[in-house]
Amino acid sequence: VPYTESHKARTHARIVESASRAFREHGVDGVCIADLMRAANLTHGGFYAHFRSKTALVAEAASRGMQESRRAFLASAEEANPKAPLREIIRRYVSRQHRDDAATGCAMPALVGEIARESDDVRHAFTAGVEDIVGGLAAYTPGETTEERRDAALVLAAGMVGAVALARAVDDPELSDRILLATRRYFTAAMAETE
Amino acid sequence: VPYTESHKARTHARIVESASRAFREHGVDGVCIADLMRAANLTHGGFYAHFRSKTALVAEAASRGMQESRRAFLASAEEANPKAPLREIIRRYVSRQHRDDAATGCAMPALVGEIARESDDVRHAFTAGVEDIVGGLAAYTPGETTEERRDAALVLAAGMVGAVALARAVDDPELSDRILLATRRYFTAAMAETE
DNA sequence: TGTACATCAGTGAACGCGCGTTCACTGATGTAC
DNA sequence: TGTACATCAGTGAACGCGCGTTCACTGATGTAC
Image (cartoon, rainbow over all chains, first blue to last red):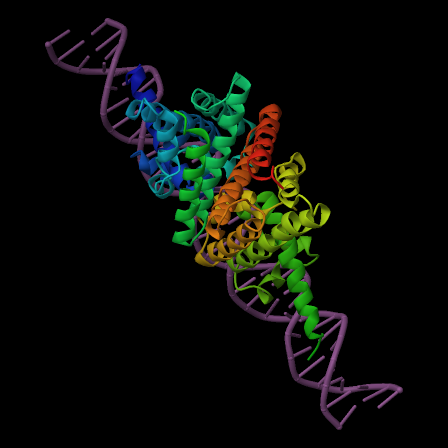
């Protein structure tokens, strides 16, 4: 058995990781396999030793991207501000930094549009990620019952995703900033004020 | 001068119209010029008699799609229910019908993702459409000042766009319905209750 | 009014390019002796 | 311990296909006489 087992696994993970970032930044159709492999310091021919197809990589990258997103916006916000975690989440998510850095930002606003047209595997991975993130948000959103908190988390997720996506699409910087500011203020007041 | 002037203009408009629908349904990269011309009962070679490039068509189609969107969701909702127009807009926009019919639905949730990576012309056309729709919404959203109403319109637009886009991306029908239901209820209560 | 003509919207074959995928290969590595 | 070997991660040329774009053409049309 040449090479240690972990060697291949590490290369595999490296490809998934950089692909996940590339997809968020340029879209799934915006990066070719040669680009993806180059980003992992490999040549394109080796791709199929690791993945059955580009689609298979997209599914893995979506899954991994959603996990990273949860960590980046939920766990780390909670650590930074344990007294008002939801306020911190909203502040970080609906921000200019997040708008301007799609590559390491949340996978939801970056990929929503394309996901709807991707394969079942990809949509499934994305959906699991949404469930996961919404579940995480629901730990902080207001509401009497579990159901109410979950519904509030869905509304908040939709609002934040829409705001970041719109802010990125629009080419007028003032309008873009305003979308973020208005959304941040609104949800902070509506959902995070009593923390 | 063979053919009347209006003949070419009508063909041009026919292409833009069907292209606008096709882009919303399949995405800009999801339809080729042959498809677009076929949908207008033409062959692909004639395309360049009407447009400088595919991008030029995308810009026109985005512009037209946004105007149609405004009419479909603002003007027509106001006509149908002049006493509670905002409630009617939210009900129609954040609906399963809208989720399931991207082709004739609003261009914002259908195209946000791709627009961010399109040419300046396309982004500009899209941005003008967003301004226009937000301006229309702001006539109904609550607030003391013009600025407050506009901010509320931005939040509502982001929330509705995010909800429809997420509901389309997710492959679990229950989650998808729930995103719509929660968002519809929430914004109806928050913004349309006092109408 | 009828006919020859010029125009140009629309046709369809062809081109070139980029991309996903395949394949014969190579050379670094762990193992067996 | 040192060496021959088998493995297989990774290489890079090649293939085929779809797409945006070009181009020589055609035939329906309005106009001039």
